[in-house]
Amino acid sequence: MRRRMYYLLPDTGSARRTMDDLLLLRIEERHIHFIARPGVSMDGLHEANVLQTSDLVHGAKLGAVTGAFAGCVAGAAVVWYFVMAPAYEIATVLGMALFGALFGAWVASMVGSSVPNSRLRQFEAQLAQGRILLMVDVPEHKVEEIKERLGRSHPEATDGGLEPNIPAFP
Image 1 (cartoon, helix red, strand yellow):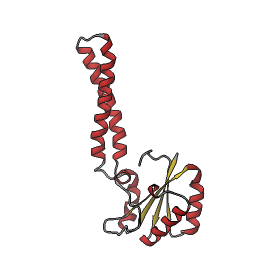
Image 2 (cartoon, helix red, strand yellow):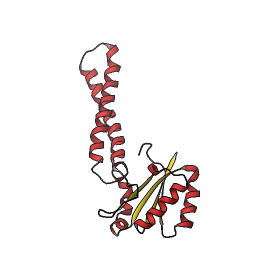
Image 3 (cartoon, helix red, strand yellow):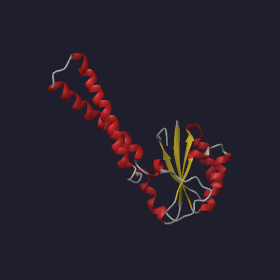
Image 4 (tube, helix red, strand yellow):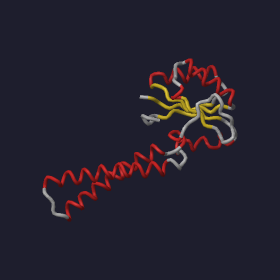
């Protein structure tokens, strides 16, 4: 299980030094993400992608659940209103639920990819002022070690908190 840690850094030089320290702490580059306002040079930094900057993952989860429920209801309506062999009733409901879940996840993820990540809303003002947001995904057992190390070697970094759970794939 990984935890996402947030830090606000004053400039790109500090961000590069922080990234170097995290790499020395054996945090892989794919678990380090930086976000800055448009126009800030992110050379040498691992920039966050659409999975971290949008609500795509949250939208896909919500769409899958909603679609599965709607598919179940639609499958039950088909079974209720149309005469079919008993062997096909369960398959119809489950098939419609699966189709609904897949379709709902697809549609909601398309919408979610165009919506800014709601978890990052608290950092918008600092990003607009030119600060850089660091999101680092660390194993649960290394959280305190990394927090202590970054606090000691980067006093300019502002601790932005800890997210209890992160999605498995971003």
